[in-house]
Image (cartoon, rainbow, N blue to C red; front, top):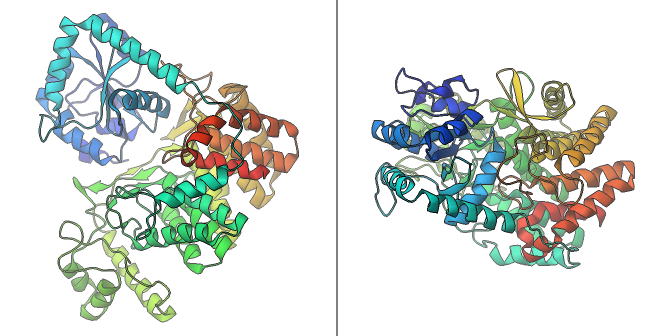
Amino acid sequence: MDVANYNINDKTNRLIHERSPYLLQHAHNPIDWYPWTKEAFEKSKEEDKPIFLSIGYSTCRWCHNMNRECFQDDEVADLLNKYYISIKVDREERPDIDYVYMIFAEAISGNAGWPLTLLLTPDKKPFFAGTYFPKRSKKGMLGLVELLEKVKNLWQTRREDLIEESNEILKVVDANYNTLLKGNIHKDILNRAYKELESIFDEEFGGFSRRPKFPLPQYILFLLEYGEKFNDDRALYMAKYTLENMYKGGIFDHVGFGFYRYSIDNKWLVPHFEKMLYDNALLGIAYTRAYEITGKSIYRDVAEKIYKFVLNELASEEGGFYSALDAETEGEEGKYYTFEYNEIINLLGEEYGKVYCDYYNITQEGNFEGKNIPNLIGKDLEAISIDEMSKLDSIRDIILTYRNKRTKPFRDEKILTSWNGLMISSLAYGGKVFGNQIFIRKAKEAADFIISNLIDKEGNLLSIHIKEKSYNYGLLEDYAFFIYGLLVLYDVTNDKRYLEISKKLTDDMLELFGKKGALYYYSSLSEQLILRPKAIYDGAIPSGNAFALLVLGKLYRITKDINYYNVSQDIIKSYGGNINKNPTAYMYSILASLIYK
């Protein structure tokens, strides 16, 4: 695991002893960082200093920017070391901490993202939240130096006010976020969800927003299921048009395959160049399902390319899957993935170079900061002959070999139980639909790796594996996503071992995360934070409760045990009112409800 690009001197702080790649990226900062430990909060109380909490992850572009601008800076470090206790958290290592403080950030500032920046009392209660800060104020953005100076003065002169404010924030957030709206899902929920998606559908480029534009596989999967169930061509069209335009765009890597996180424009051209395991797992499911329903080879082709990327770039020798690839190399976003026109011509020669550049929209002027993101926007994918495609594939192999000689993006080699669960289900499903035994074998290897390495002696599922060590009690998404993966694998292989482990882990999940209604985000075994929320709505990562519903539905269908059905109904009714108010925020829960219809 190479973190050398982030080291600026030979001095180290406490983070040097951590396993997280993100924390190690900050181990050479002049800041006296603590990991999230009891020691840090005791020090805060002992020295009567507020907490500066910074949350991010290793492949986050703006986290890198703030590191370079602020955390490697001696002036910033001097302020933090004198007047604050500074704590650094990897959101992928501790999603529970991130989830809880993200709730507060949204409540305090109205928006949230990474890096997430908070100021806390020694009792862990937040009184300020923000995201990225430049070192000094510019272009209407508050600078970190000014913020730290201001809060330092307030802590010294109006400390009681800040503490009282933090107590009030906690009361309000606890009341608002832990009060779910009970009720049965309305009978017309499927039609309402469909109509909402239709109203926000981008007729020109597909997708369901303007910019930035996220793939949102839950919307696509819903439209595919709705279209098939009700024989609705419009629903199928929206799903298919979105899938095809995403693939044509630069959000798909046409050289090494796989999807980036999102597009910053409305036509899917310019991506944020990060590649995440969970995005590719969920999109693999969406493209595979589209092929299953329509029989169109384009969807099979894209799904297989997604899986080829994952197996080439994110598969560990141990059996599990790594987390992500960074967006930048050598401090420049997209440098690894983009090309100049003359670069392609010189590499391939005039004849083949022009063929490739014409097909993939590569020009002298470029489409991204003077360089080119290969894309198929405006191309008719069905117009190209098999011979022409074969030629382009041969050219692509040459370009990929050339690109592989560049400095590669940093790879985060955390193996996360939750994201592996999604990839296991995706590969197993794809393997079944496409008749590909390699996909199924790789899904089995990943499942067996988790079973062997991330279930402790007491039978508890753990959430993370790095450098031959597994640790942290599993969160709801670890249990729900992994069990779901095992059940899909059982469907595909009929190996009863996966079913038995699924049933045992499901019993544990219901015991550890709440016996009635929606399940808590973290278990009774985990560290108890200042808030114990119930994650019910979907973001880029599905809600743990939605996948718990999918798990219970699958188990009910397999075993006919009515208890699974009853528990699932208790869960979904506990936030049915939320679903009725805003269906598109709960698409995976709605998809889970289709199991019983």
